[in-house]
Image 1 (tube, helix red, strand yellow):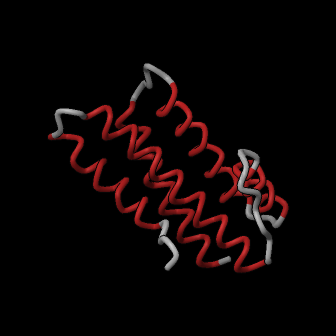
Image 2 (image 1 turned 60 degrees about the vertical axis):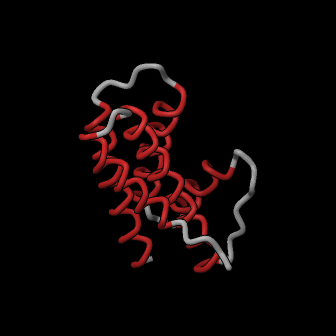
Length: 122
């Protein structure tokens, strides 16, 4: 059975929701950003394969490949949102300080939901 990557987006929402009462607020928000990105990235990767038979690399270049494929097909908003989410995910995963972490996490959940809706219309 194949993993349903939308569960990562569900988890991101849960982590965001519990962050206000958590002892690990920053960790919850950082994980929310990361899971939202990866769930969305994999849903987009699968859509490329399902719709256009595009097989995305399993290397680090896959992230830029997915964005490029959507951009090349005229889905600029999907590509731009994925790019912004990737930038924020890198900040959340690698930087010691992320300004406005609450707002970044909230915006990434919004972007994730927007991308998921757009993928259904592609």
